[in-house]
Image (cartoon, helix red, strand yellow):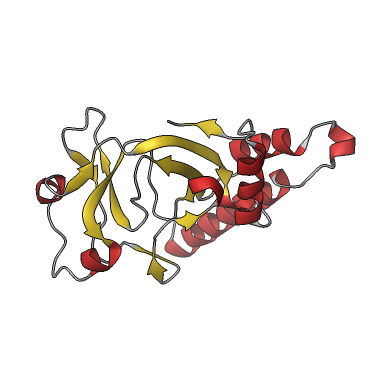
Length: 180
């Protein structure tokens, strides 16, 4: 198969995948399928791919501290950002403040998160990204989470912050998956 045919095949396959994906995300009204919005959001989060919506509360104020991911037994850092990787939409990836002390992750954390002594500003000014071992020595808290939920993907919301605050106000996290 020559290069031209291969490229056309790949482009065709991608177009087909996009068409199928768009078709799967079509909405059915609540009155047609009898589901409420929360059930619908759960269904969508299972089908749609996209940036996850992680909301969480911490035991102390770590909102301006750089997060890292620990291994399961919390004896080493499994994942950490480079000094250029701490941005979200051109600004520091500091979590978005929600109601009642809840935070919306903008960095990509999970239940194995730990927070460093470094603020985002301090971390961005380091000459080079420290090693995982060096960063492990800078951890403030290896168990900082009070609660954490995954609430679908960012594509599931029309007004992300408003809708998350409504979930928080209602104290009904049934549309979310508890992570911690």
